Image (cartoon, helix red, strand yellow):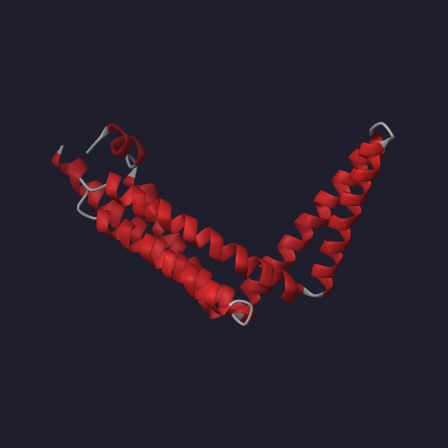
Length: 182
């Protein structure tokens, strides 16, 4: 095991706890996927609204000129987009679904690369498996978008959390066994 691996996984109990939490959250997401999806859409809309208000405040507190006009226009666009997403949260869920697809693909690639760095561990294959599952989920979302629907986002999110949780638990068990040998 290299220094990076030892340093990153020194406290196996935190990874075990994190894995258990991910599994519980994944099960909850699968129980109410439409609520999880809509909540994610509303959160996105609120973040855009907050960003638009802050940006508008900054525009008015600065010097007036060409940058003021551009900042004010951008601020108003953010606020209008946020209000529309709050009025129609399904649209924000569709946008999040597309972003989740991109995120899962990147997460999968990173986990696959990381798995090869963790090959000294017996459970490195779990990280590889998690990466492959994340990429497959990304492909499923991408190929079914925009029909993927409101519940699909919550279901995919729940599945990803459960697989990630099992992966973290397997790493924790493997590191604990290596620590016992050292």
